[in-house]
Image (tube, rainbow, N blue to C red; front, side, top):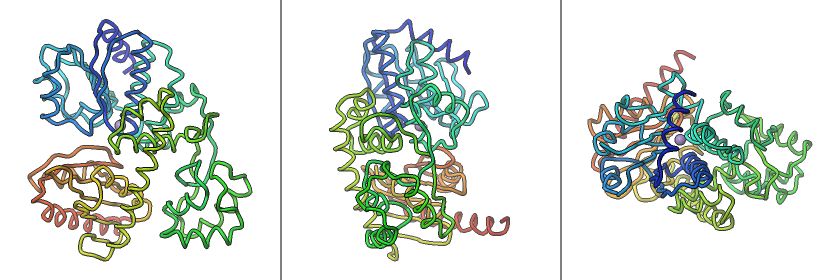
Length: 422
Ligand SMILES: [Mn+2]
């Protein structure tokens, strides 16, 4: 792969006026930021767009633009044939880590899967992009951003590639309580964690514990962490994880919090704020996005709680299927699924996006990408993509009920299988 990276980098070096397209999640935004920093350093002209996904419509529009060099980051591997057809005669680079749909003939396609590596766990688009850019210039100042993308794509434990990047970065690792939002007060972080169902529960817990509810998560001392760890380890949930932090200002100190900020910028349709934040600017505004986003998540979680016993939610042993329709933003259904995954194992969420229905699947136990692919095949409509832990699909709105029936049956079979093999 190193050889291909080098060859591809040398070819890119010859180009100018470069059209960059990347994905709207934390990994895609991180990859775009690293690429942008590299292009700035080389003094290239460029334009960046961040998109939620690539389909033939988006590609057709892009191909009409007056550029001769296109770079796709964190997407493209699923659309190789379409890209080769629509961009014939142009210079195209695809740097992606999703499972490739086919091998490329004409374009430059760099993907870890082509080298026997698992793009789902070993390299994110951001870290792949970092390795690519490193062939062209010193990009060490963006090493932490490469890790932000990897964390955004849930690539833990770190692969040897990520361990190497970690060593190049200014990031320190220590064990801490599995809570999102290092700069948030403890009570708030607990309230929004998978450990508690409500603020009241979290309040009672903190009171008993004797740690100030206002103490920030990243200011907890060793004694606090031990106390929390003991008190939280009641039903075998994993309580600790790695905390990745830099000696930097508040919200950007904690890499996981950086992930949340970037995801928020993407989902609130302000990805350029995310790129600016990665490059060191407009940080207040990016944090503002995070607050908006948290409000939306709060609404989504409340809707889920209120409707858990209702007809839109199937809540079974080992899995949950949520048909949120227009009650949860399409951009947030995957976020909700990720949060519930810890508790329920496998989550499938459906939500309306434009005239279609978006499906998001998250799982701790089964291969989400393969499962969604099989379901789409059975349904005979729609398209899917993603990784083992996180996958997505779009289906026609009128197929929702049919899809849920198929998914429910399949997940029930899988959970029985697990019981037998366990
Ligand atoms: Mn990615």
